Image (tube, rainbow over all chains, first blue to last red; front, side):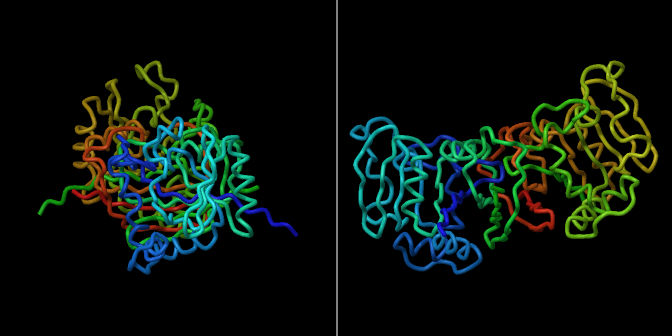
Length: 220
Length: 220
């Protein structure tokens, strides 16, 4: 029997619903205060190991990271999350992205863009493949690459909203960090098909860092 | 020693950050799908008792309602939450509000409005007092009336945002219901002073109805 890889969202958000703060720049790609959304993850042993770093916490937050890493076989992201840039690749000063020679994904990553580009293989199992024909094509390619694992949408908000509007998510996991950003990039800022759409809360984890990890299943 | 009553927010919100759905009308004051935000509370024994109703669940959701009722000594709300109307009271078809002769508050309620009106005493301990000189005056009056209990802001979003922008909250409790409304009235839609503002997560309760009850303390 063929099991279709599920499409999941796994993203950190502020209490007031932002996934990045205001005034994003190349020096501060998460905007003012945006790094506070990810402190819980950066402190976790599993996150640090994926990023080639030593040490880290082995707490409830770490278990959430571990489960995420273990269940995801391919990632889809937007061009802006990949490099912070836009337009033709030859004009993008960060065209090689943020993550150096061994990115932390360790699986195939599909980047949605309007500008064609050959795949970029990296060390440690990450290959960046550039998809110019839309979110469904990216999802199909990611599913084919994910094996028996999930496909995760990593962001940004515009890409999340496109998959949400198309009704394609099977699961949504939010990591709500205990901070009010007061502005920035909203995660949920668009139409939801079949709204009001009831979800099923699967699991809540209370974190020592004050983050609430909530996982919802979207009825299919 | 004088203990100043704390100002708390205690409100139900959708996953995508709305406290009412789109298309609010007098017949559907919570908008499309908005009632789903409150199903957990309406099912609870303590909520039903406060509303003069029999029966109800005695589960984790009910404990959250009980604690809220026990700790709040006065409520502040906006005119629109009170009646759904605006403008002069004599033109408001719902000037007597939604709650009949024995409203569920059982304590003093202060209604922010631009239109003066004499206080309206009701049965069961609720008196509606109308405040025309702004949020700080309403808070002062509510604190004087709350005794050794908290003052709660009940809504709507515009009133919450005014208190938030003024930096007046001591505690924020969100009841995140497992529904995507896709539109409506956003709870957090304005500036936050001192943003990014880190809060302290005090408590998370996972509900049998799939609601996540999260309480945050605002550092003072």
